[in-house]
Length: 274
Image (tube, rainbow, N blue to C red; front, side, top):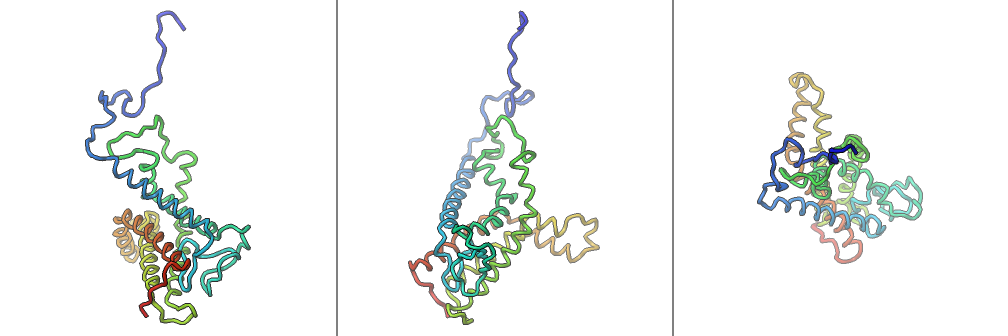
């Protein structure tokens, strides 16, 4: 080191970067800004723990005529006999593992790459940033330009994969109007649970930003495409409620699976309306 020079220090980043206001506090918010990311992280953690347990449980996911949305369609030959349901046995015994692991990758990938869920777990788990006007604690931020977060850009393709899964779950709901002997005209509490669940899944799926872009994107003149414009307007209205639909559908999937589990394990019998 030359005589008379001083050691150099790394340039400060974030709120301490040159040109920023010289405020010692990391932020000036006095409200409970931490509550929202805390609730988000807690709720997502509870669902992740529950869904992981159910996915590896490999049991109590079918009770005629109901099948858990976490296990449908059943693609392995070691599935429980679903009496004509969506059990296609395409992958053999799947080494004895739970058949849920074959199908969950599609709705899970769709939700993990969803724009709202990115915001939720970026803030709730990674504090990137934890809240508006609260600086993130990371010294460097590269966004979604590098691995692994650059893979978030496959969201549109997961949307295409999520559509047939939603269609199959709709088929399961139709079958829920049969009794355990296959006769039509059955309706129980489970039928209502499955019906509400698929309605919320479709609403969440169609409110996706990718769906909105596919329907109305790259159009120069809406007047020349009145049908697509009308559909774009409907999807846009749903998109404005994307956060609510994301949480509602996530909860409904958990409730539907829990209901099937409780009935299949004999905790209670499905109340019949007719």
